Amino acid sequence: MTGIILASGFSRRFNGDKLLAIYKHQPLIQIVIENCLDSRLDEVIVIYRNPEVLKLIKKYPIHLIENPNAHEGMSASLKLGIGSLNPSVEACMVIMGDQPLFLADDFNRLISHYLTNPILTAAAYNNQRKTPVIFPRKYFNDLLETHGDSGGRHIIDKEKNKQLVVFDQEKLFDIDTQEELNQINISKEDYHV
Image (cartoon, rainbow, N blue to C red; front, side, top):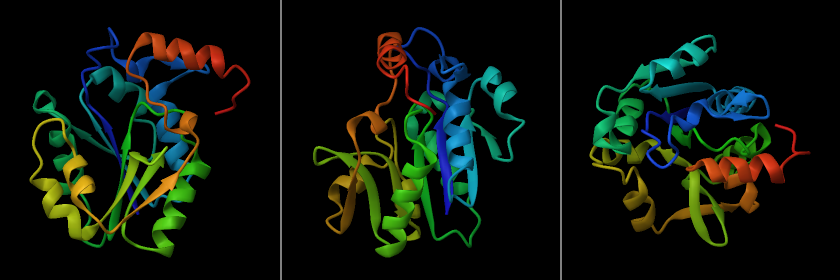
């Protein structure tokens, strides 16, 4: 299974590129990549926009794709990732670059659920689907048709045959503002990434 990390947003609410923000002495994007590499994912693709992000992550054994159309929203990143998949890939996991608390074991748990029942599989909390999401190959063409910032949400929402894998809320926490980063830095002092 290939993981596609979406890391080309503009972080408009963060006042700077949130992927470069430090959590536990490391930029968020590096934490997410390392968690993916420590998991059972076979390959990791990162869709990036910022050259500063590229400088940080080019040392990893990952496939890097620059997104020249990041202004078009999340769908532009998703299309680049899906379009780059090897034809033998049967499923991909779409991952956000701003979820540093979702660890390798969490990725593995999501993968295990998918392998047991290979249908659309999403992380969830309180009965609400979140990310990461595993899309089987049958959705790849639909994902290539997405537009704007919706990503694959409409595909997930209209699909009846899916499974939600429940995680603790903190695992699915994504960072959109400096205040949210401060919140996890304070509340997770003993949390080991």
